[in-house]
Image 1: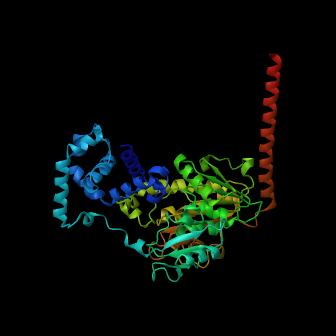
Image 2: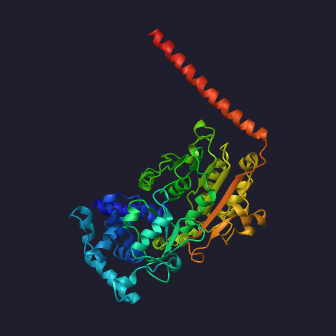
Image 3: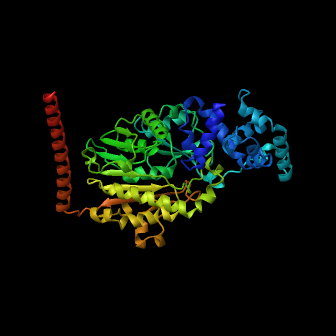
Length: 472
């Protein structure tokens, strides 16, 4: 029965918008992941029908002491009606469902007749058609091998260099992102030995834009922050661009997601990453540990309104949530807080802010407010010029949503389906090159004072401790 409780908890997390289906399923324990993922996905396909059956049978009302949530009822009734029975011992929860078995089957048959369904499959939710136009993207992990070596190995396995929609085995090298390969949407790599060995990363093209635009230098002196790192795709991309040199701090506040992050980084061979189970917003920008940070990647929580992948269309509440103005305002306030916090790091020269949202309130409006903030003015931050922000990409920001319409050219947007990607937004803030020497000196002086203060404090503590020891 624990298997069903775990599946119900996963559905609870999806309802709470704690991540995409793929991302949340990736956090499940390895030994149960495949089985739990299959039940969650199949339950989501039939969620509307199952919820109606449960409601008509009054299951939750009659068994509220045993079946404590709709999501638990959904996974149990799914297996009862669609998978040959509940796969668990005869405990009180299972018996609570079985007491209503006849009524549940009867209500299910009524719905099939009402909808003219010839089979159970006819009741499943139809996927987002835009997802069918998005190739399967695979990023070559250049920490393990080269793209040329990957292409050669794929060809020996029967793949051919051709347009991915012309052949099930066709693939091409992407024209915008180095080391990114495009395959047929039906191509699966989840069980592929290259994927399991960390030699390839399954990552949407638009998701590769932030790291490519941040473009941290590949040298031993580089110090970079990924502020919200899990599950680790962008982190591993940054590590690859840095060629495992320098230092990359990867922050993730959620414990389960942090575990996923560390697993992925280990598999990808990211040796220059320091993963930290810490909330980025709690980090002191003046901490000597981070005073040499020059590049920061921000990809905070967002509405996910741009995601149209092969599974997330199953979240039927998505359209309603997209129209929830209060929720979008809360998200935008949090996103702005993240950008302003990043601007407080005294050595930072470049900040990339991105979302998988299509809403201007989370995108252009956050950029507009960031540029008008005290932090931006104090640090003399502005948007990077268009030729520094993926200049070959055609779709740009929305001019009418910005204080200065010309700034739209410095922003990158991806339209779900139209651009063969999920919906995405990327912006890049840079500290102006003409930052005067006095400002730099002030920052350095402030840091020195803080370090001196910490040393003095430690000396006082040691002196006090010596006196206490002498007294005893």
